[in-house]
Length: 180
Image 1 (cartoon, helix red, strand yellow):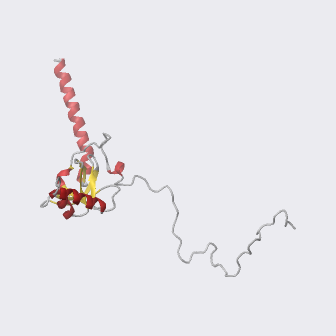
Image 2 (image 1 turned 180 degrees about the vertical axis):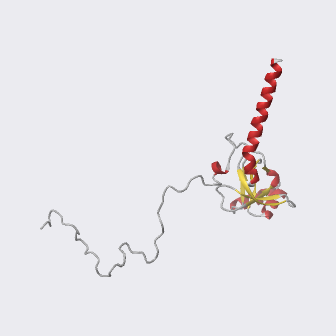
Image 3 (image 1 turned 90 degrees about the vertical axis):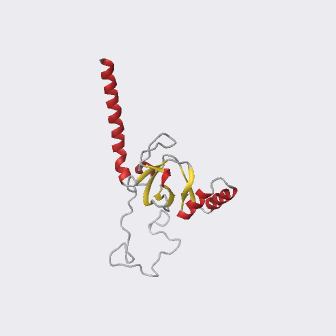
């Protein structure tokens, strides 16, 4: 009887924990976030580039295509566990347009490389938009204030007068040698 009770408590704890984790990331999935499941060079600037990479994966011509695209910065690696934001999906081609942290352009990749279930990265951590850099977590620590307008003058209603510049080599305050 005690073994059944312990087993029932353990099963319910596992169920509650897994559903809590699912709820934790379901709001991210609803906002379009996905986790990469592949370790491939299939995140490209255009749909045609992805097709070119997929159609020639292991041929000599494929290697040349990969090298050319890397040199032209048209292809990026997907790493397992990296969180991305899907901005557009093309179900007919099986491609998704994604936004990755640190990349300034949106990229296209195969939808099958993206998971709605959280995937741990190489460090065993589940990335979130805040930890990956997709969403800034804090405002800038430096507040420079408002930008001055073109008619800005430090003293109101006074503008610099040409020709009244200080004379080079003279000091505006008395020094011990010129103190008179």
